[in-house]
Length: 615
Ligand code: M6R
Image 1 (tube, helix red, strand yellow):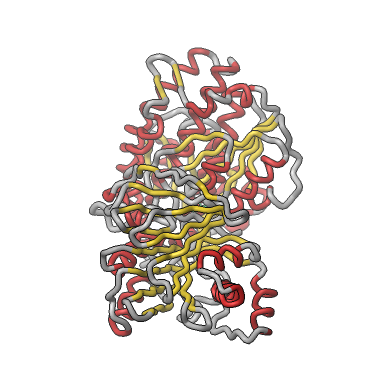
Image 2 (cartoon, rainbow, N blue to C red):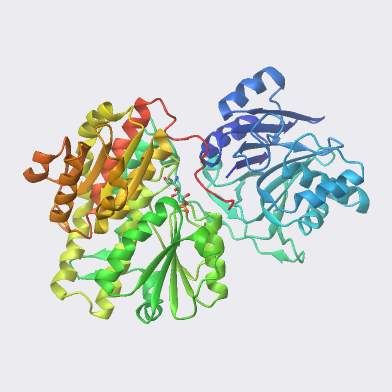
């Protein structure tokens, strides 16, 4: 939540910052701001609204000259989104400017203390407290900015990625992180700072990802020094070569990132299993699993923690792991797990699933499970993310950057990784027959092609969207492997179109939700031929006899459901276990088209942010 960008070097900072903020808008987009330094003074401009609103404001307010600057795009935590609460914030003297992603939890006592010492505050933010705390430390101890930041940070409780700039020392920016990501791009006599590497991808492919409790001072024409915030010890910088490219973070001709990402699924699923799935040889090779195979095989239980769409992927995995590898699985919301003193120990394996690898609740759940002795395995998309580093081992999904706030390709690639893990464990434990094992391996290889075919449902999804775009409620029903897909379909619709939608196991309908059904209620039923097909058909009949409008996702050629449903979307045939990889596609498309027809901001839905780094 919140995106931060900084630049210090020989280029004009403003265009780099604005372009970078646009790329980071997925992290928050309720207000934006920038501070530039032009050899004399700080020039500040900030506004409620998006980065494009900031550009308009800047054009009227300040000159954009200057080779040093910091900028911010916000997802409000403390203080409503308005001009004053927008970042950057200045200290009382006007010398220091700060941008911050995170939360200072003890800001109230710190603020009271600063008020006693004569400080005044313009905003309601915790960040303005931090910048004044730094100023107070600097003044009292008569020390340099870096040291003052370090002392101040040792007094705060919370999470942060910050950039601080002092106009009296305009050749350096001080950065620090705890719990929120911060990458430093290293160019020729220039540094780029950002929440992820996308703002500087065209300038350098060398980056350092700060670890928690580390800070750095980036100085013009000087080497970078990284220190531990707590004990001031020097850290050897680890420079990584970035794997991201510019094409991946642009829309590539699509109107929205979400659509681009939906259409990328055949390719990224292939990327996910490339080099890992060897169907001809009957092998799955995943280093993180091979190195820890005993931990998985001997696990008395697998616990899966995640949030949102990743939690839905975890639910699909529960079915797959239990069926293939016969290991008991529990799936929990990370936010619940972390606060309920869970029973977990060294015989348990915890799998944490996260696209961003930065979700605060998932990170906290990992830390708790580690403290309690569990082996923790991560399934993440973002390489080098906090979760990928915090876990004992893991597997990347290789989906490439997912920028649309609504998660699409992350979901299907997570399921792909988890399916491969389940198959590998099934082989090790002998819990699947040899023929089934080989059949599933070969089938997984055919999934990208079938996903491509499932994408041909786009026109049907669009036509159905035209009919139901003004609905106020939707129900999504599925059974077995497709119950989590029903939840995911409902989440997709509500988050981007703001239509209320609920996902239910189809059989649960008669325990309550059936009361909602009337001729106005669209009910999306996921009814592929395999699995509990006959039972789902009965559920469809129950809806039909109460005049609900049925939109059914069926296996190609299904005539039985076609005769009952009002609308039908056909997907290719596949096994029950792999059906979520296909059934989810038309649901993504349906929610996309409904949101577009309702004039919603598909890639940046209201109140949301891509990466939820606050609890
Ligand atoms: O990055 P993560 O996978 O940890 O994110 C978890 C959720 O915040 C995320 O899936 C969210 O629910 C998406 N907006 C769903 O589309």
